[in-house]
Amino acid sequence: MTPTPHPFDPLDAAEIVAVVAAVRATGRLGEAAWFSTITLEEPPGVDITTRPRRARLVIVDGPDASVVEAVVEVASGELVGWDVRDGVRPALGFHESLVAIATLHGHDGYREALARRGITDLTQVQIDPWPTGSFGDPAEEGKRVARCISYFREHPSDNGYARPIEGLLAVVDMARGEVLEIIDHGLVPLPVERGSYLPADHEPHRHDLRRLDITQPDGPSFTLDGHVLRWQRWSMHVSLDPLEGLVLHDVGYEDGGHVRPILRRAAMSEMVVPYGDPDPAHGWKNAFDVGEWGLGRMANSLTLGCDCLGEIRYLHATSADEHGVPATLTNAICLHEEDVGILWKHVDLLTGRTEVRRSRRMVVSSIATVGNYEYAFYWYFYLDGSMELDVKLTGILSTKAITPGEATVHAPELAPGLAAPVHQHLFCVRLDTAVDGPINEVHEVDVVPMPPGEDNPWENGFEPVRTRLDHELAACRDVDPARSRTWQIVNPTRQNGLGRPTAYKLVPGSSPTLLAGEGSSVSARAGFARHNLWVTPPAPDERRAAGDHPNQHPGGDGLPRWTEADRSLADTSVVVWHAFGVTHVPRPEDWPVMPVEHCGFRLAPVGFFDANPALDVPPTSHCH
Ligand code: CO
View 1 (cartoon, rainbow, N blue to C red):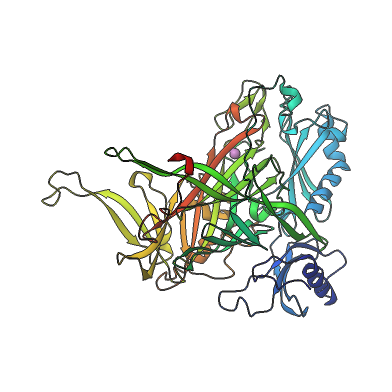
View 2: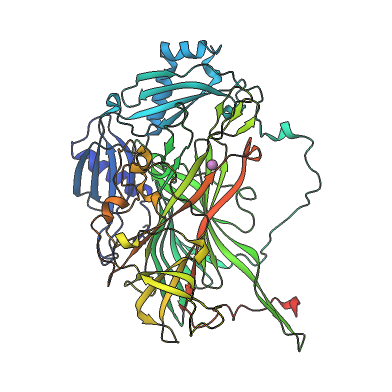
């Protein structure tokens, strides 16, 4: 007997087998049909414990631009939805990517282009299939296309990105295994340096790093019950979605004997990496790593002492492969506590008495490898009721070979004959908020100078100015660091002990917006990245900021389309979408592997509590 799953538990192996059998039994699928994603169809708000569990399957049944979205009741196998969506593509398939590579291996034109560069041994060629974007090329219409970039590895353990086979692009119909076009922009010599980051190539190693052990002899302070995590009054359900990666449900904080809700659901809804080099061999690059690849599909199995240090617990992630067969990624989500310096402190100068408390945080993390890049996602929860999302970017830059000394401002030089185009990493997190209950509104709060006048005789005055964002178009906002702009998620129906509405504020961090021009393809496709804040009323089918199927999509879907309706944001639940990220001008220090770069944001209580909620954190005994 398996225990009754939590309503938000991902499908287990038996459920995946059952729903795949159910859709096959309909007789509607061909032999070659494959499964892009098979996930829990999350129950809507009200009937989460009573509605039978359902699965949503995104099925690819032919070589055209078309997917089937099927919904199946898990226990009965009953088909409750079958929607054929033409003109859209799923995320790039792993097996189709292999087809693209094999197709190029067998293609004379591709091999001739390599031979012009003196490369004849295909085992020395690394081929990276990329999402091709959407530039209105009629040859790509109705097809699932990858644009393939090639790199040279003299030895199998070489860093391919050190030696781009510059100028050579191959456009491949992945589903049919046909080369559509070999594009050769001309020869550039292979860079000479190997760009190795392997330990043997960097000896002698520094020898003065002594052991640093994290020990918790009594075990960690959190408990894990299935997917439900409880730590220091925080509670939440944690899982991994194939596309969105980490998903948190029902994030709440226990206060006064009951759990006060904060977020109903939180996940990365989309991200885009637009490149800013107009070079025809690189200007087409923009990757939507959620919708075109999938942060959960690309997640790493994490290693103790390497990815996470200390007293670690893991969650494994079971998902369906493209044949519909369940597979389990062990150690997919890492759970642990970290010491983070002081939580609060004061020295009473009259008595000399010191009170100081240590801060620690609960960390929920997952790391995805998407081609050359690593994206590591860390949700942090603190003792003072605040929480944070920290995205760490590392891995290897997307590179190009140049004639030595001929770097442009669009692609700074990394090593002799090697450069990397400027680019952005723009994330859009989706926060289905529930601060103290379902009815929330969003206020923009700027801190501004008071005008001079009788009530401001010293002209020192400044004040927070609050604007309620009442409709979707008015809620399309950008950061303003000079005014300390924050966005408060307010519950107008609940009051704190001071008679004020309870709230959490979103404190933005590094938050560039899209730099590509308004007429660009990526601007149409990644409209979500043109603003830092969007607010929508909840709608179960509005999950992903660039729409459900961004791969090769011409654009206009997702947040810009939904918010055109300018729906009211009053007396409703709200979904807060926050776009943030990094504009990356590559440095020599980012080569050959990039030290971690950070971006993210913080959610902090504002009148959610009546006072510092961490006064009851006990002093560490030897500090007194
Ligand atoms: Co970067």
